[in-house]
Image 1 (tube, rainbow, N blue to C red):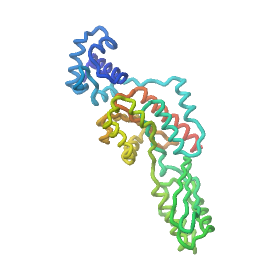
Image 2 (tube, rainbow, N blue to C red):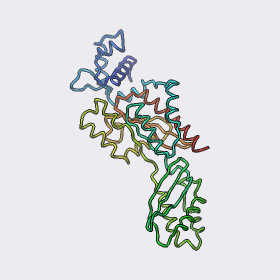
Image 3 (cartoon, helix red, strand yellow):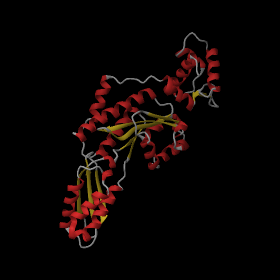
Length: 343
């Protein structure tokens, strides 16, 4: 348990380090943040904070920097979340509330907006496909051996999937099957397509079942196997503006993170709940993120959580402003997507 003076000193050190990136000495704290206490007294308190695990001392400096434990205490106990100004709120609304044709393209634009506003790396999961409602299906022959399944959902997602075409099936059959699939599947969630629905569709085929059933099975199997989410990234190069990542080895390690799309998907999907998630340094499950902090929150479509939005930055990121921004963007995006896709 920290007393009030130690709290003030720890907060001042972290605030200064976030702003400058330079190890913080007792004289800096005495001159800039805490008046009426000698630098010698502050130095003793800093030594105590180091012994308690809240601060670290780089080998080449007399100053201290926060440890992961120090950042965690700061975030949980000391941080005051800043409020966006009315002008900032209006700007964010105007940037997000725009027309779009395809949801993934829209999410890419949002990632660019976030990376530009924060100067960190933005990471977003697109709406969960399996939670989406089927709006439209069409089967289109390409040549004698292949056809395309076009799937459109209520979230504006369009998937074009190339499949193998059985013999003895012509364009009239594809039109016939498309009509049946639209009649039976339109308005359903992808995750709700079950064996009963499949049997109903096959029964409608009647005498055509032998020829057309393989296409139905292939289409439904493909829909069921559709990726739940995609991960969208923007602003990867932003991290190299921070001295911590100017080292070539650290830069390579950071870039390697973004080759692990499945791991990134798991991390961002683990934040699919109501509240802001902040992971600092070694709290991250990916070893390559131990020098980073991750801030995530979720957005909704209607009453359902649809995906997550967040940033990856250095451990000395501007937590207060970042939490406020991500939280507000998620709320605004939820309002926009709910209005578009549930009315």
